[in-house]
Length: 404
Image (cartoon, rainbow, N blue to C red):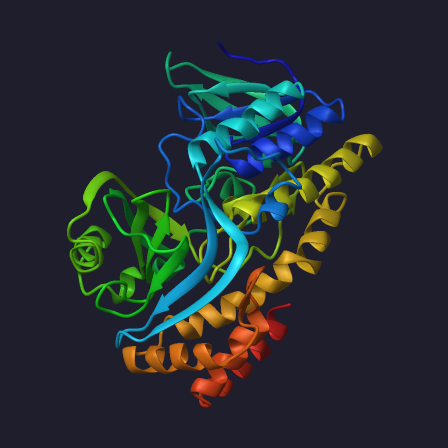
C-alpha cells in the first residue's frame, strides 16, 4: 500500500484527546482518520486512572457503572514523618476503568463517522509547500508503509509523542521533565474509605509521590512516580517494591505497568501550519499531579473547534489555528502554569520541609476541595510552611514573564 485516500483530518493516537477530537470533527461532517499504533485501543493501561468530578467528565462522555471502578470521596496525604492529612469531599472524583473508557471514546468517534485504524503507526508528517499535509503511516501487521494525506493533522500521540517534534513545536525532554513511574494492581488490600492516598518523601518516591487509588473492594492501583535525577541509581520498580512492602505487604500483585509521566511546562505553541497538538503530546497534563484525562478532553474540544473553523475558511496556517492556543492558555493552561511552578518547588523539598507542608495543609482551608487542588491556595500553604519559598516563586514568575 503506497497511498491512502485524502482526509480532512488525520488524528495520531486514539487516547482520550485523539478520540474526542476525532468524534467532534466527524460529527461536523469532516472525513477523519484516527490512527492507533496499538492493536487494542486502551491496552495496555499505563495510567493510575484517577479522574476529577464526574460532571467534568460527563461533558464529554456519558458514564455508566462499567466505566467506573470506584468513587473518590476524599484524599489522604502521608508526610515523610508519618503524619497524615485527610480531607473528605464526597463526589470529588472517581477511578476509571481506563481501557474501557478509552475504548468507549473511540467507539463514539467511529459512531460519528471517523475511520479507526489500529495497528497503524505514524512514522512522520507529510509536507506540501512547507506545511503539514498528512501522515506517513506504517501498517504494523503487514510491515507496509503508506501516505495518509489530510488538510490538518491532530497530534495526540501521548507521552512518547513524536509528532510535535516533527511539526517543530518541541524538542527532546530533559531528564527531570519525565518522571519514571511503576504501578501494580494489588488485590487483597485495605484501600480505605474510597480515599485516594498520596505518600511523600524520598524513601519511596524521591522528587515525586507514591499513590494508592482504590479500584473497588479490596483492590487498588499502587504506584510511584520518581524524578530520575533524584533516584540515587534506583529504578521506579525498586522504589515500588519498597513501598508495597511498607503499605500493603499482604497484597497480591497483579500486572506491573511501567512508563513515564510528563511534568514539563506546557508548550508555548500548540499549532503549526496544518497541525495542532493535544493532550500529553502538548504537555497539557497537570504538571503537579501528572493527571491529564480531563485536560486532554478539554484540549481536544478546543482544538477541534479551531480546526473546524480553519477548514471552513480554507486557511490552515498556524495563525489561523491559533485560536486554540489562546483558548487553552486562558483556561486550564493558566492553572497549569501555576501548578508547574508549585511542582518545581514542592518536589525539591527535603523530607523535613515536606512534613511541615503537610502540617500546614492540615491547617489551611480550601487547598483541596470538590475540584481538587486549588493552585493559588497550594502556593500560599507552601509559602506559609516555609517563607523562604516566596523568593523562589517570585523568581519563577519573573522568569515566566520574560519568556512570554
